[in-house]
Image (tube, rainbow over all chains, first blue to last red):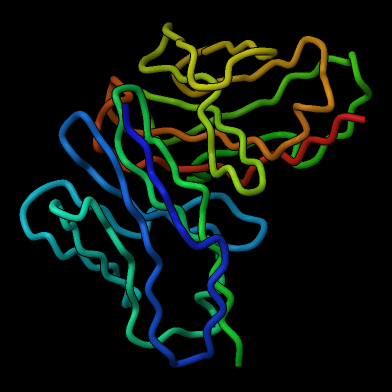
Length: 111
Length: 116
């Protein structure tokens, strides 16, 4: 069975500061990992995903995540956040039927 | 190209009433999903359809039924609504047949349902 743990339900941060959103997973099958973002009153959108190859994956808007097999982690980072990054972020692992999502981390960027 | 659309956007029901949530995608995707989102619990899979003509139960199917009407449309029905079904419901789709793929899932805007 697959599961995802997002340890932080809320992360407040000031604009232009760095941020890390933590994600740990467990999986009994091949590991494929995803980060989705949900802006207020919208559906989820894919931010980035790890399927194979380089363990560091990047999004077009400056986020990156590193797959760490030994620590079973896939933490999301950004060196300098903007107000527009305020959203809820979900880590997910591919299961046998569909994606299994974590409980989400609400990123609140303050001016 | 509208992507994934859902109707209605908001709905208030009384306990025991029934309703159908509609979902349609115009991306020629094969797989479709229904999730519910509750505070602190992330998204949980209700039902899914790996291809036109097939449906299967997800993590939390009790109290729901689905119909894959054709390749574009996947509806979710609540036969007798209960307060525990108050939630935000999301429909999603992905390209390939079979839901255990690594394809990106595309989500609709959601339906916010309140059951009194």
